[in-house]
Image (tube, rainbow, N blue to C red):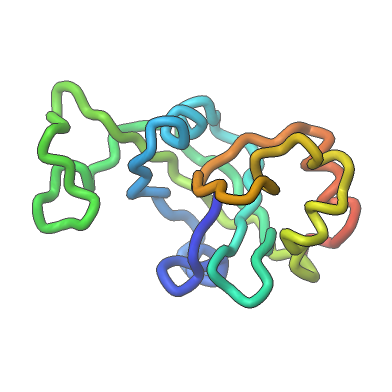
Length: 147
């Protein structure tokens, strides 16, 4: 799950403990989120920073359910075409699990063979939610400690 730390950071998640991952307005990212189940591990990736990369770990706390921001006309994520009886956008709640002892940078991920076919390392990728394989999960966690 990618986030810009000035909008919502790993520190914000740590402070709050659990937070709804709202505002997803891309169908493919939404579908990836819909496939998540409670207990799934999630990497938190900071973008738009000096060294973009994976900074921490969270876990999925709830199954996907309608994102209430789609119905709030005062919210930047409002979608006037989404109706309560047929919502377009979902979210999951994520909980803080820990921070990595060091950032696993995008450059480092590009050098890891296990990520060679991952959309995460492709230029121009703008999805805020992407699936990873078990091998990718393990490879990242073998490089750093979780605290």
